[in-house]
Length: 127
Length: 392
Image (cartoon, rainbow over the protein chains, first blue to last red):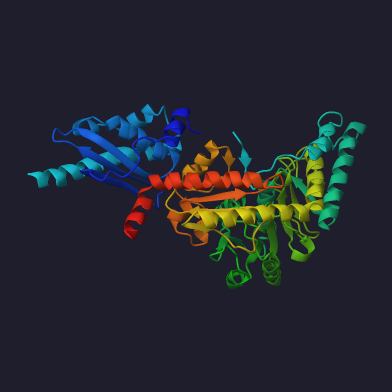
């Protein structure tokens, strides 16, 4: 059902876990739908994402997309990360079964949620 | 890598003894059982013998046994054929919320055709209690269908009591016994059912062959129109090798029933005990006593079933998940929801089903990998982090 790349990313996910000193955190999805993704980022003063990690409750596609999305935005600026689309995430994984495409949206949404939280809360506090 | 198959409720391997009996009917005795010549008659004799054997094993008449393409066709025939044949009494069909898709989908079609269908609930253990039927049955009820044992959580239903209620109200009663036959003792006459479905590949017989038992005097309308096969009740060239196969498989399954039941139940009970001892926050779905020996179904909290299934699969272990993501819909198992299990826990449910060839070594291998997989996925889960954080 899943291609080798997805299986590899799922069984060996990158950037897993909570980040204690994150300054941008976003959570999307809910348990009733069967998937939740929480993303943690450390964004520096130059708006560069220095570090990123995630926690995901969900199917293999949700975990694989979470993992690959974090690797794709690490070291990028906030502006660049906001441009990441779920299509790019799916392409990076070499495709997902059609019924699993909705899982990839989660990663894009979680990144946007975390950055929006950062822009509205953390930056305001600094001013 | 070691491979362990714990999905015997999905299907079983064909027994070599069964294959041996089937083989000549693919090659040497290939005749059409409906042909008058000797080639055809060799097949016809084999089909007659198989029908008599199955009837003897079940304690019924050979004329009450109809061969079909499997459990799904038998269920479709019983439900739709029963509804149309007995619809003059009334257009009310009663079934349960925990039936196999073959029944649920047939009922949905009947609803579109103007039948009223009532879906009986089950209790929190997955039992369809007789009082639930008593409450809703009326003088318009023509067909009642409740499964003998559930495929997901293995609960064994009070069929005899349900059947008596149906009969008292003049309705006919069908049971889907696909998971039960060959696994637990089934006395058709004692149960009193009018129709019963079962399938060959659940007890080490071939796929693509099933039986609908139809009690004398009960006449469901035809589902498959065709030639004169099955006393003109079910068209289609008789699948002679598979008919031979299902009768041999049933004979072997019943001859070894006590032995296999004991072996399978021992391993299942050991597995359940170890899981509950070693993994916190699990729910054992279903009834602990009124249950098929081969079935264990757990909800592992804070994780999603498909991830667990795939993690086990990567370690050579086969089991089954009724969770949303694997079926492509957002709805988790309708059976677990019917028992009142919250949606998020239903998402994390997995069925392990044991077979006659399962060994204790297999079970230990699965336990070891299961504990590791659950830990790995929980450490990734924001729900688990929240739970642990909340406790601190």
